Image 1 (cartoon, one colour):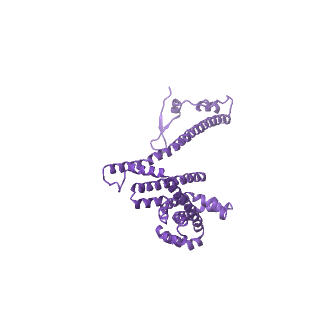
Image 2 (cartoon, helix red, strand yellow):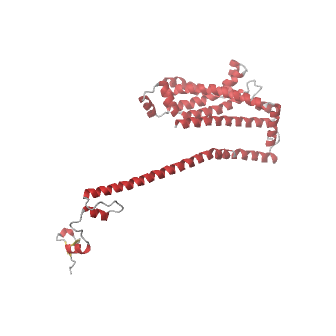
Image 3 (cartoon, rainbow, N blue to C red):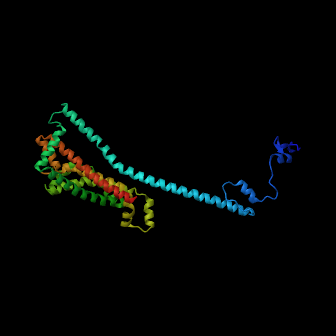
Length: 350
């Protein structure tokens, strides 16, 4: 029987590290036969690989193992790609469902505050907190709406006011786009025009009325011009600011591709500033509706602004409230249409 002995390293620096003797090694492990090939050893130690032939060399065995591993990796990668693709299809369908439900949920949530206000209005009038001349109930406003519809006056007032706002907005927004682009793109134009436009922007809307009547008379001209003034300043300011803050790297990339002048403006600058430009257009449209009431003070006999002032003079608070509600609804409808155009343009840009 062979004895298992443990010795110490003769080197004093080795410390107490045990050293196995040959007898110990032979007793604890089984050495591979001297004539065993590398292929057999690889076969014993490699799991889930394709067995190499008995007479394969070490290089052949390594080749077989590598090929099998590559095959497994390719199968796993293909499975992962298929899984990700299926997940992407499920995710895109879910995203479309969520996007489809988003506008409906948003519209429903947007009705909460108006319904609460109408309910509080009804409660306040029913409790006698206000007189009939101060705040008529919602039913009286609906009755006034029916009265104007029966007399055929409502649609005439709405059509005249809508025409004035659209014409004035088109003129003011167009001038604001052109002048804002000129000031935003040209340093000399900015130095020449920006201070004067900033000063004119501070003039109140009613301050323009006497001058416009003196210059343009009491026809449709001064009304449309006043609405155009209201729409001009928000559009001009946002276009000017957006174009001055376009990423200079995008501009340099466009110039590197040979874009100059109008082509650079249309292909690079305006698409980059599109969200801010549409924000300015929406502000200008809202400002146009605000200036409409002041415009229809100018010797007007039709329009929602006239209806508002006339109902005040005749003591018809129900028609006065109806005029305010119609202005709010028409303004919201026009803003919603412009918002649809904005989403289409910005989506095409990105």
